[in-house]
Image (cartoon, rainbow, N blue to C red):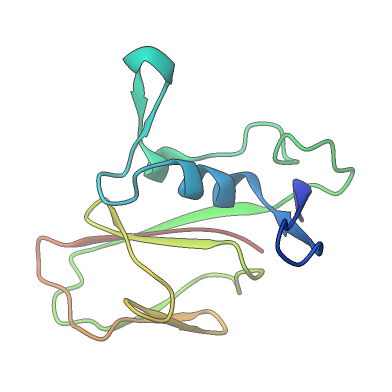
Amino acid sequence: MAVFSLRSQRTGQYKDFSLLEILKLLGDPVNDEIWLEDGEDVFNLSSFRDNNGNGGGGSSTPLNWHTETFFQAQGQTVFTLQRIPAPPVLMVMLNGVELRRGADYHIDGNRVQLPFSLNSQDSLLCIYTY
């Protein structure tokens, strides 16, 4: 599932990262965007999709990326995903703003729970691997 591993300068331990995790680290989650060098173009994090089935990391095991959008969910606080996300790759965005796991939402199996209810104009986007 990991695209590649990096070694921590502090601990010397390796940690696996997916392409989506790196994009989230490099991008601006508040504005849902990644800027190319020299301001050539801007891309939305929420438009992420894996085009080659393996995240670009050369893994022989294809990643199963899935995107689900919830519209017109007024008053709803719990959202059931079609599949159980494979940790740690789950990105939840509300109206284009990335939510933080543990602070803005909680995940239990395939259920995403928000500490607040959505309005009729809200749109919740979940991008994950399974």
